[in-house]
Image (cartoon, rainbow, N blue to C red; front, side, top):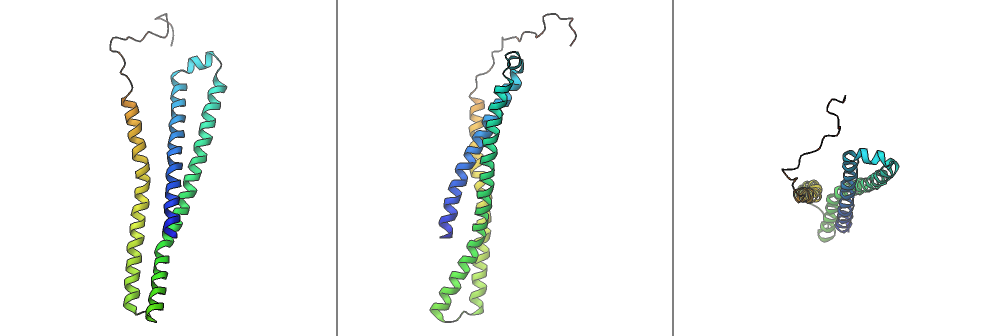
Length: 166
């Protein structure tokens, strides 16, 4: 039962993390757009509109990040109880089948439990990478898919008067 709860939780955490990454990308895209086109935004009085867009995206991002953190803590708690549950089940099985539990079997069960706990820690550390790496590759692909700026394009000066104070 612990393993099923753990796997369902990992699936839910994975989905929330992908949502979080999407909101983070959107927020950074809005921020970049705002910084690049600040004069247009100010001249058309779109500050409030841009603020609302970025704020709504940031709220959604924080909400997803909170859910990811809570699910991660829950999964960490479940993951650390799995070896102890395994040990208790193994002890109960030995007790009911043999009537007593020799000391060497307790030591073997504890070693198995420690190995299982170590494996769970490795899996928990790898799950975040399993989610983050595909998102990073997606960002790199999107960046590389952008067209190059034409080499013969010369940017026009912002000020018409070359002697104007800056």
